[in-house]
Image 1 (cartoon, helix red, strand yellow):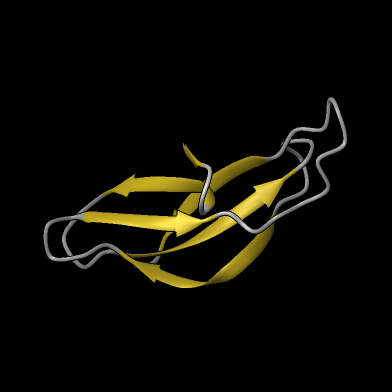
Image 2 (cartoon, rainbow, N blue to C red):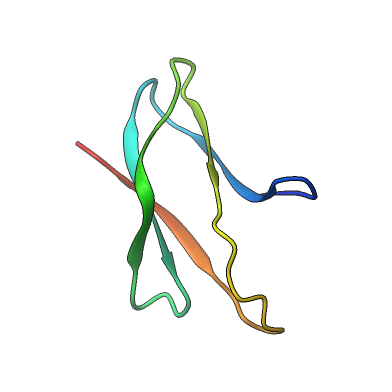
Length: 70
């Protein structure tokens, strides 16, 4: 996770060149939901996903995972 003042948090991703994936988020590691759309690593296998703003209640946590598309 990269924290940037001008763009907010971003997930920095490394994978196979042109690999497609979806990003999921959870507040409790039990219930996951897809956020955003289909994402793709570039030809060098790098990518970034801009985390959508969420309620910044003190103590609230968000977890993210990537699901590779076959």
